[in-house]
Structure formats: structure tokens, C-alpha cells
Length: 193
Image (tube, rainbow, N blue to C red; front, side):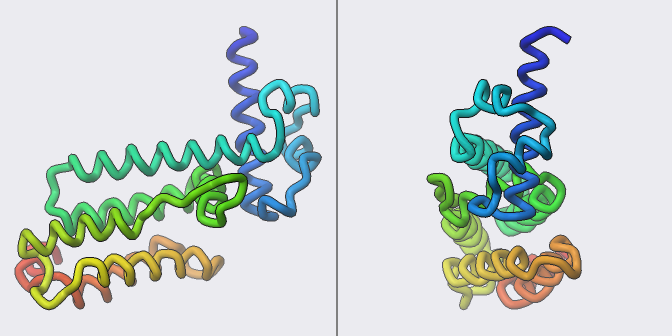
């Protein structure tokens, strides 16, 4: 294996090992030795790629931020109405968090403001989509887009906090069934069963 390819594999191995440990034990409770053990890498290999455990965490935060930004932009450009865009976006975010430990760990680090992480403002993004949905007649006239975004955001955070049990995707589907009945216009509900 060429040296550059081997270095990329080692870097990715360290990132995944750190993400798995942070996801399992939490950032603060994870010693560097646990990352090294899980990844099967030496301290020298680790320090070749990263200056510290915090540096690994910052890369995980950056990866999830880039992924969420690209995902949001892709959904906004999808050509769907704003309410359908919100549903699709949230459903994909939940699947990614469930399926990808790197994204899950980076998101948790950012949300907990660990290692210099700052969470993306999902509430603002959802408010924008709900406001556009209101302007397009997809929300009931008495619905405040900001309030709808706050409720959805709080419910999504709650799904993550509940942990094991029903899958996050099942819980989010339940959230949508309840929330959409309360906020979506009758016309939108009829055309989106």
C-alpha cells in the first residue's frame, strides 16, 4: 500500500476509534489509550496525525458540520415544498446519526460544546423552512413558524436523550405524525398522506 494511502487509512482508523469511544464513554471520560487500543494504533502514529485528543474531536466536529451544511443545501435545492423539505431533511439527519458513529460523535461533541464545538442552529434552519411553508400556504394560518420549529427541535433533542428503546427513526416518524397534524394545512395533509 503506498505510504500516502496508508496514512489516510490510519487517520480514518483513529477518527473512527475516537468516535466510537466518545460515543460509548463520552469525550471527557475517554482516555487517549482507549482510542489507541480501539484503533490498534501506536502513540507515534496518533501523534503523527493529531496533536491531541481535542484535535481529533475538533476534526469530528468539523466533519459533522460539513455534512450537515451539505445535507441542508441539498434538501433546500431538492425542489420540494418547504414542509416536505423539512420532513425529508430531518428524517435523513436522524438516519445518519443512527448509522454513522463519526457523525453521531461529532454532533454530540458540538451539542455539548466540548472540544470547542458549537452546535449548528437547527432551530433557525427549521424556522426558515416553516416560515417558507407558511408563506406557501402549507401551514395552518394560526401556526407560528418559530414555535413549530422550537417544538420540533425540542422533540428531536428529546429523541436523542431518550437513548435505547424504539429506533430514533420510529420515534421521529411518530413526532411527524403528531406535529404535522397540528401545523400543516388541510391541503398539504391531503396531498401528503
